[in-house]
Image 1 (cartoon, rainbow over the protein chains, first blue to last red):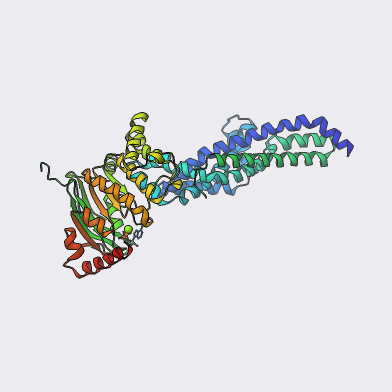
Image 2: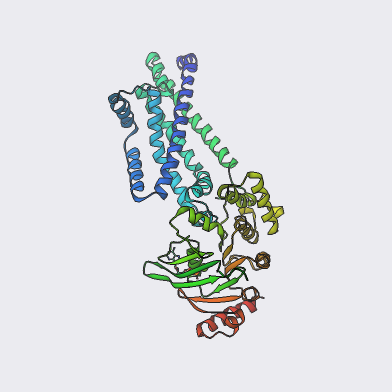
Length: 222
Length: 254
Ligand SMILES: Nc1ncnc2c1ncn2[C@@H]1O[C@H](COP(=O)(O)OP(=O)(O)O)[C@@H](O)[C@H]1O
Ligand SMILES: [Mg+2]
């Protein structure tokens, strides 16, 4: 056990350095997922039949295939065939971002559909075009309602990001494994890795709660 | 009277939901400064009529003219320009829940009319003042009473410089003690010469304001005429029956 602590303290900076890699992947994927998810949700709620179908297929695709399969497909399959060179790090952000956009589009779509019909009618009644109504009236409200869903999405992406170690991204798990194989202190090292993930989950969830409180409309309880 | 063209003319509007024929050919005209009131039993199609006039509900048939010019509603620009000219007041207010009173009124002038911020703000403040809400501008809808909400929604419509206002039971969602403040605002609009089409069951209010009352039932205007005649001396049995009923309710509650 003493040996375990020695190994941990010697390798702590290296493993903790993985936090930044993990967080960059997670935050990058969440932001990409949000931007795409917004467009997809609006397309799915307000788009024509064809557009709605297309979004449906997109969501089905990215929610239905395991992350690892998608990572390999993009990195070794698609990008290699197109002879596009991207680092595993970038590919991970993109793939996680695409998956997250599928989930986030459904979170936002649910929020849009939960708004009273009168909001769109009122916006139209003062002469707003539908696109203005969506940008200035519908989405600001839908986004607020989506925050609890994002908290959940953050914790899922955070955990999923560990899988990117399979492409060689030097995030928390990759670094831990590296140390564990070298020192044979598997137990303590993976306990440490687990604790780091728990801590990140905790801090992230708290931050989302603060955000939710910050943007809450006064007097509005939901 | 220089201009005799009706501000708003609607001709033979029909609307069905599936097999349910909600509007069976409704026509009416609003002259400048005129105030027409629509009464009639629940489910008779009054709200649908008002929503159709603003194309918030698509019509199956019928034509709508603003100042003599027919509105082609699938030309987007024409439609949004028309809707600015036709203010709509909803039974349940439909304020933008994420914006405070000031921004509810401001959003139209800024985003639709594209007025400069400062000018739009002055305008919005003036409209809120007009409906007596100067001291409540920074409150959010959830912090306002029903009467205040409805007054904000009137200010929001007025900020677009409408030529006509459509009001769908503006006080029916309000507690009795809050009805007066909204009626007062509507009365001010009337004395300012606003053209209005008002759905209401407040008999006293309607008869003091309207120059004509329509009795609507089952998707049709059954009878129309001056308030005294429709409310107290209608020709049609159904109209008489209905007016007696709402008259009684009104007397009992006041
Ligand atoms: N969106 C809708 N879908 C289906 N039926 C509707 C819809 N809106 C109104 N209706 C029907 O149209 C009829 C008239 O409703 P409405 O215009 O609200 O009447 P009123 O305002 O006179 O009470 C009712 O039978 C109602 O059920
Ligand atoms: Mg109604």
